[in-house]
Length: 613
Picture 1: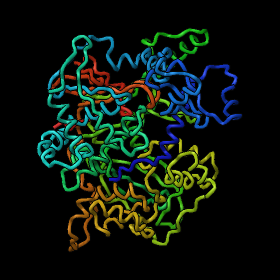
Picture 2 (picture 1 turned 30 degrees about the vertical axis):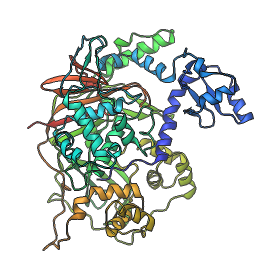
Picture 3 (picture 1 turned 45 degrees about the vertical axis):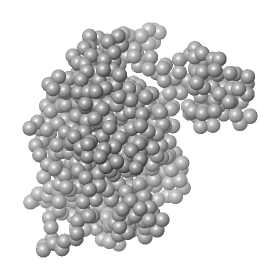
Picture 4 (picture 1 turned 60 degrees about the horizontal axis):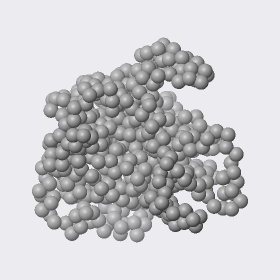
């Protein structure tokens, strides 16, 4: 599987989009833009909210040049120019993050997810250890709490810790396996699970080294900003995969094979393709709400109250209640593909795609896609409740492969001409911060129709599985051969212990992109290490792609929930089934859960099901 980290420009775009929602809190209505005019006249871009400055030289700083909140590491020196000594200052105003958190706490979602209305009984002991929040690190805390509930990860990093530690690496601080094992032992041993009776929280574990190590070199996770838990989950699995060469990869228990069936709309021929994934993203169809009349009446009352300058009690909010089956039905729905290269007709036609699962993993992570993008390109979180079952049968998702009554499409001709992209439009889309492969997709599917059509396509498909993956036009013949690999890139990969042939194959398969080539080569490590064996006869296609397969029945064992309207602020907590009881992990607060709010979980939040053996 390729778990490529999205390109930095993509993160730059997301940061820009997310910040647009935060700016509504930063500026008051009726401003006269004097600061903007000052920037244009003088070229000095920074504006500081003085009441937020602390004696340590921290504070809210906005840059008109970047049109975004920024960090000024030299804030104390800059203010000294104006005769302001930060060491004599006291913080008097709330920062942007604090204002957002205060707003969130007033909502019923915040109260429900933290079970504020219940007398939560604090817990302590083995596997009941909290994690200290290092400043917007709740997304890390929630993900690792869930990961270290899975036996495969426990065997590798906790039970296998003595062997890992005994290797005596030269630089243990920067050794991924050592730091992951140290974190796992800290969470499960119970030796740091000491309760502060007055505060109701634990001493807990402070994962400073781990956060620094896993975020190194990443444009987002190396920062101290709030991040997306789902993106961190994928990033963490990528790191684990890279450090599992010649070792058991615990993430294999989360892998499953996805099967896509595409049918030509004219010839009716079909083609099956497969890939490996580590999560199942399910759409959340708001229109399928089972309580639509109640939601409509509530929205009418809320609109009337706002028109009168009033506000309804947040505890009385009526959310759309979405049946879990509706999410599954939306995922299984047939999708129309335009511009499909039909090898049967040697022409572009309309085709129809259906997605199923060829295998079912030991543990299945389900992502409820609660985050969307508004028409003004600002991100928004769907304020809905999804009726997640305690147990679920996903037999309807089982793919069956080529059927006797189906005719496979012939292989595409090798001389299929490559698609043409409008270079001017491609440059404009890249300047907006989108990944180059996503831009190619947008221009291909919109026939180079223009910026508006392409950008609308990008916003609609931002959450697709393959959004930033290398683009191959639908129906085209995929080849491992590509342009010659750059020698510097080959040597860079060879320094990690791979052969020249392996490095060249990986670079050709990923268009010369080194990070993607590393993902490609690590995901095929066992296959590449095995000696070539000439098959006696053509082998049937491997539908499993090396993934384990089992029953389609699962039961809920954990879920991660997000509070707030933006992934850049807010808070993550997780609920875990521990020895038959549900436990809430809210950073370093660990307590017995009385009413697990599973209907508000997501992964931007995530829901994790385990096999019902």
